Image (cartoon, rainbow, N blue to C red; front, side, top):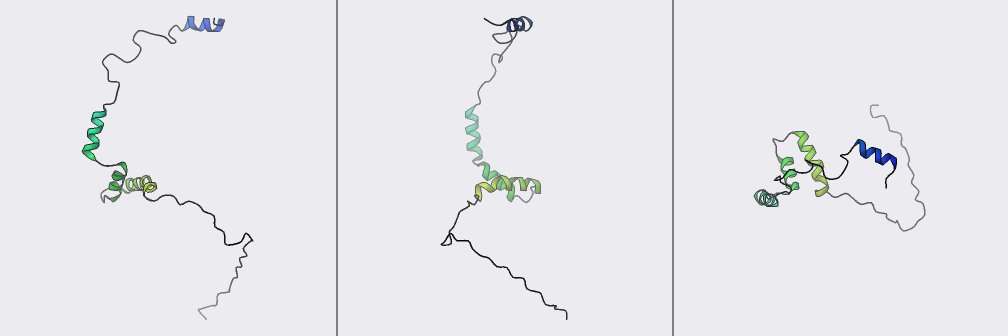
Length: 109
């Protein structure tokens, strides 16, 4: 049983949910991607997306903006990010660093 608000809503909008004439995909329309054609394209071109980006990057006729985009997208696959590591010098004692400034002598004199 619904509340009074739900009953009033159903009376005002009878097309909420359920089967309606004309709704859905028309008969005879394609509903699935043709995997056969995708396999044919993969055999025809035999290039990975990385190969394509590198070809754009190495093409002298490519625009600089396009080369920059290709370099940004290809970089993580060619140059992995460096991982941070912790090293111990041999002791956990604080390290003292001294900086001494020397006055530069006048070379023009």
